[in-house]
Image (cartoon, rainbow, N blue to C red; front, side):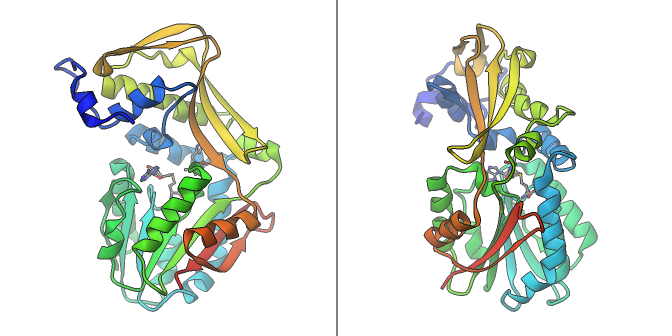
Length: 326
Ligand code: SAH
Ligand code: AVI
């Protein structure tokens, strides 16, 4: 871990304000093998690129989950407590959330909705779009990290927490369980969690989703280097890195990497450091874990929730599960 006092010792050129990503970038690029936390993918440009990804023909998760929600929204809402308030982890632009909010408003007069996200650009869009369509939803955006869960206690009970979009798949198993346990600690008996996860399927289908023919996922991945250039005075040449994605069967995950096309040294002014890359050396930027229904059940149980029901699509590509705190 890089401590804040270590960062203060780095002489920063006056023209570059120290970005909050500095510690994560310094730590991740000093490691062997190099890696960066996936939450750094979501600056304003990254969030916009992710929105494009959700519309790609190869990227099945969003439309599959949306279809599950559209088919079963009324049944899902009938299983919720009366007059629920809704919190959401990693809400993004809340496009799919509106499917549930619409259905919820057929059962209650108004909804207090608390979307949490690190991306203020995505949250702003979420608030604008939800309020434009659904005037009876009061949106309370929470800009922050999954570590900042105190907002769940601002919600009136009973509470529903949404964690959809398979975003939990971007966490290591141990971190996924810890996050659910932290959520559970802020909830009370009867409060519920709606969790969306991507399921293991034909590897060709999964690989195509992360290596689309239009190259949007590659741009999403490389945007991380552009962000480091802008926020930390980095000198990365994005074209000197390849977008690499593949299915790691043993770990049940898709991996995203940025691979150095040649041996090169890259200066990052705000970190007062130069990062060396061998030809073919990679920065591991994201994992996207794919679950089985059995492992999804275990995840909920270890996270402190009792599984109530799981909905899937006809191909069993994606699952949405409702869990409750007993
Ligand atoms: N739920 C939406 C968006 C998924 S994209 C959907 O289903 O389409 C993942 C979202 O999680 C992004 O908007 C990203 O900014 C957010 N995110 C990623 N890591 C995060 C973290 N550690 N804390 C808070 N938000 C995070
Ligand atoms: C947000 N998350 C669930 C996406 C995924 O599928 O793992 C992020 C993503 N990365 C590349 N394409 C989409």
